[in-house]
Image (cartoon, rainbow, N blue to C red; front, side, top):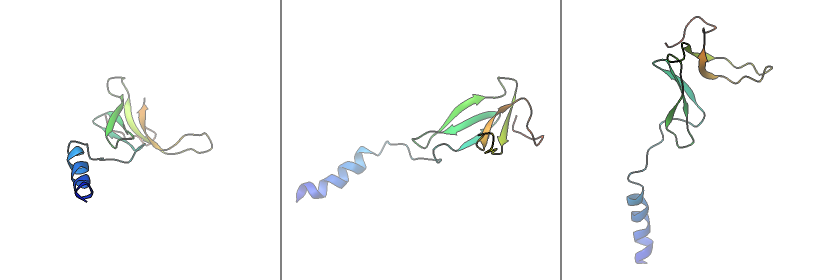
Length: 85
């Protein structure tokens, strides 16, 4: 009986330092010229520093016929003329 009451408390205390997911895995975004991808743990990670590579971070539309998913990546120029550099 006592163990049944303590178990939820131990789980909460054990995870008090666990990071809270802030994004959905495989989501992408551009932040200050950096392409980022969301990891399986829900935390943003740098995919590529576009500015350091002399490129722009662009929002790419899916082209399913060519096998290209939508998302964000580094390109010399963005198709729509925009981008986050």
